[in-house]
Length: 300
Image 1 (cartoon, rainbow, N blue to C red):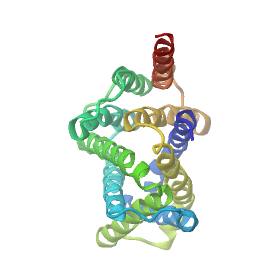
Image 2 (image 1 turned 135 degrees about the vertical axis):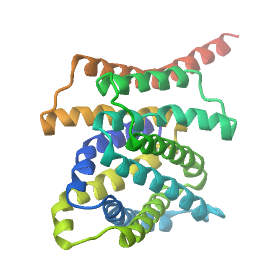
Image 3 (image 1 turned 60 degrees about the vertical axis):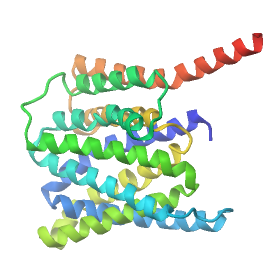
């Protein structure tokens, strides 16, 4: 898979997550956030299970030592992000949540430098800042007074950044993206259901009311989108992946217009253009730089 194809996979993930934002926010009218997380990731585990079995049968190399343990760590980071985002939505505005969640686009390169001592391509830094500015403009260019939900959403962005960084480390090294996906989904399903059983009531009527949202989030937002993320990140860097995944905010706004008759302001359209410019920059600049370097070396 080429880097361009990998980034298209990540763009697809962003599109699915963006469309799923409506389901994620409306489901809590009928069901608690922990049960929603537990059920959606249980479905996602079932989606990934047959793919993981096929992958294991076709594998030519044994599973690296400690791989499953590392996959569990990724699952814990994913669960942390899912919980803090879901609970944050209870007490913050959609505008604030969309912007603050997108802060992971800045956290990823910072964490990569701080903990992995890897310097990303120089275009990542202006690209990350451009994407953050675009998300801010897309949210209307204003933020309401910060609440406890906003603080949870900032923590959520940190968890997403850790998850993206860990996937970037372990997905290419193991060659088992489907097993990684299934494991992280199972961790979220078990942790979410266990906590929900302790703290949240549940009824069949509540599950039935939220079933369309649970199914969409389970099959598409969790299953398909996170699998695309894991596959795509095998062939690109974590900081670059974060910028393409940040298109979630762009698609959330577009699907809000299509599905909920929401209106994007002129400032919002400017934000869309800025996000798109950031994605083009991180895709084209490294390729152009590589070609110029190759041409210079050939001339010498």
